[in-house]
Amino acid sequence: MITAGVLALDKLLGGGIQPRGRVLVYGPSFHGKEVLVRRSAKANLEAGTPVVLLLTNSSAEDAIRHFDGMGVDARAKMADGLLWIVDVYSRSIGIEDEMPGVQYVDSAVDLNGISLALNKIQAKIIH
Amino acid sequence: MSLLFGVAPLDEALEAEGGPILLRNEAGVEAVPFLVQAAACAIKHGHKVAYLTSDRPPARVRAMLAGAEDRAAVTILDAHSALSGIPDPDAVPIEDPTDWTEVQAVIEAHADKDTVLLIDSLSGLAMRAHAEPPEALLGALGKYRRAVVLYTDWGDQNDVGPFLAGFPSVVQLSGIQHRITTNQYFRLERVAGRSHESAPVLYRADEGMVRVYVPKIVITGPADAGKTTFVHAVSTRARSAERGGSTVAMDRGTIEREGLRVEIFGTPGQERFDPIITPILSQAVGLILVIDATDRDSVARAQDLLDRAWRSGLHAIVAANKQDLPNAMAHDDVLDLLVLPGDIESMPCQATDPGSATAVVDALIRKILATPEVTP
Image 1 (tube, rainbow over the protein chains, first blue to last red):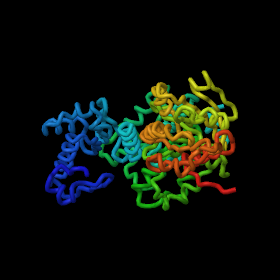
Image 2 (image 1 turned 45 degrees about the horizontal axis):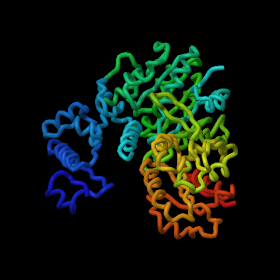
Image 3 (image 1 turned 90 degrees about the vertical axis):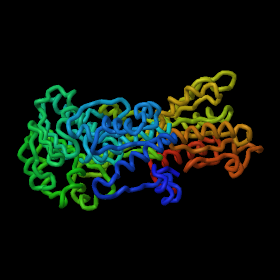
Image 4 (image 1 turned 60 degrees about the horizontal axis):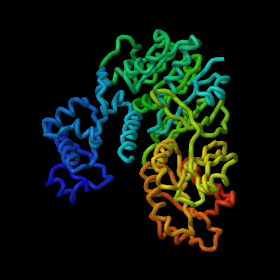
C-alpha cells in the first residue's frame, strides 16, 4: 500500500492507495489539493518510495522550495534517485532554466512530450 | 537530389512522390525529431520552412531549429500562443486554433512551391477543435513544396480517421513496449496512395537527431547451455571466439526475419563476464535465455539472468535446450524449477536443429513487434 500522506485518509482508503492505483484529487480552489499531494510525496519519499512530480502550474524551482519549507531536502532526494520532477510549466512561459535531474516539457498541451518524459523516468527507476 | 528527412530508408521511398506525408506516431514514441530534420534538410537545400506549432511555444520551435543554417528561412505559424495567452511578436498568430477555417486560411496564405510545411501537430489541433478537419485542408497542404504532418495516435482518432485516410503517404512510428517503451521503429505504410510493404527500421532520437540502427537480440544463459550452438543454428553468418570449448568473447551472427535484419549476440555464460552483459542489454530489443534441460543445478544461475532481463524491461523468452538428450527434463519440469517473471514464456528447444532454434527467435520477434502468430 502507498500512503496518501494523511493517516485518517489512509484508513478510509483501507490502508492506503493500492499499488498501480490511480487517484484523482478533485475539489474547488483553495481547498488544499496541492497540500495533500505534497504531503503524500513527502511521506513516500521518507518511506523510500520513488516519487515522480509532474508540474503544470509551477516550476521545478518552486516545487523544491516548497519541499524545503516542509523539511524535505528535495535536491538530496533527487540525487538519491527517489524524487523525479517533470516541469511542464517553465518552457511554456519562456523560462529556459536547466536544472540537473529535471525533465522539461515544452507545454502542458504537449501530451506526447509528457509521455516521453515519464517513460524516461520509469526506465531509470526500474533499471 | 534533395533529402527529405536525412533518414535514408524514408528519403529513398518518399522523395519522388510529391504529396503530403502523414507521420503517425503511437503515443509515447518520439516523432518531433523527424520534423526537425526535415526542416534542417529543407533549409540546407535552399528552401523555406513554415512550421505550424500547436503543442509548444514558438520560442521552443526556434530552440529546436537553432542548429539550422539559415533561421530567417523559417516562418512559425503559431497555434499555441492563443492557448497560453503569451503572444509571440515574431510568429504568425492563429487567433483561434480551434477554428479549422482560420487554420486553413493561415496555411494557404503562406503556401508556395519553395516552402516545406511542417505541422506539429494535427492531433493537437484536432483535440481542441470542435469539428473534424475539412477535406479542403489536404488540398491546401498540396500547395506547398512538401508537407509533413505529425499526428499522435491516442487511440481516439475516429472522427479524424477519414481525413488521415486521404494522405497519399503514411509513415507509422511505433514503440516496442514492455512496461516501458524500450525501442522505437518506423515503417512506411503507404507511398503515393498505394500500400507499401516495408520492414520495420529501428531508430533512436539522441539530442533531437534521428539515428537508425540494427537491432540486437541477446542470447544468454548459464555456461554449457548451448548458446553458441543456438547462435550458429539461427544465423546466416556467425563468428565465435572459443578457448577450450568455452565461449570467451561474444558469439555474433546475423538473421533476417520478415525483412527485419537482426544481429544475434551470444554472451559468455561464466559469471566473470557479467559486467559486459549490462551494456549489451541496453542496445537489445529482446533476449533469449538458453538453459540446459539436462542440468538441474544450472537453473539458479538461469533465474538470476532472467530476473535481470525482466528488470531491464526487455521482451524475453526462455529456450529449454537439449530436449533431444535422453536425460533432459520435460519442459513442464523445467517450468516447475524456474519462476518466470511477468509475461515471459518458455519453449522447449533443440539448438542442434536450426528449425527448432529459429522457432524460438520467431516467437520472440513476434512478441517484440506484437504481431499475431501465423499458422501455416
